[in-house]
Length: 108
Image (cartoon, rainbow, N blue to C red):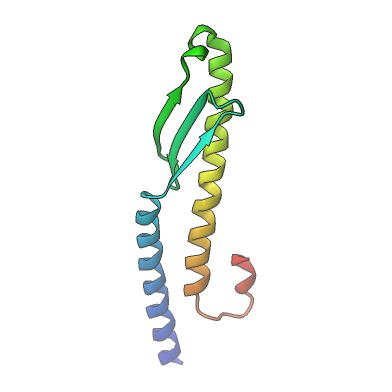
């Protein structure tokens, strides 16, 4: 009984270390999102840190349009980064979890 418990604790600590390593690696994974017409480009990490925003000069004439495009493009970039982040972390967590009956459905 205690051997199983110690084994599970060791596996959980190993998984926690892998999750932390994955979080650090996701800082280096960048995604680029563009507005539909390509006038705005956003570069973001998988940990949702914005690295770069490029705006075409044509948008500088219309403040309202620029704001709308920024909101749409930033939201799309954040959503995509969140999907990558959650998928990567869930895969690491699922791989490292001990086989506890009923817990497998949490990481599907």
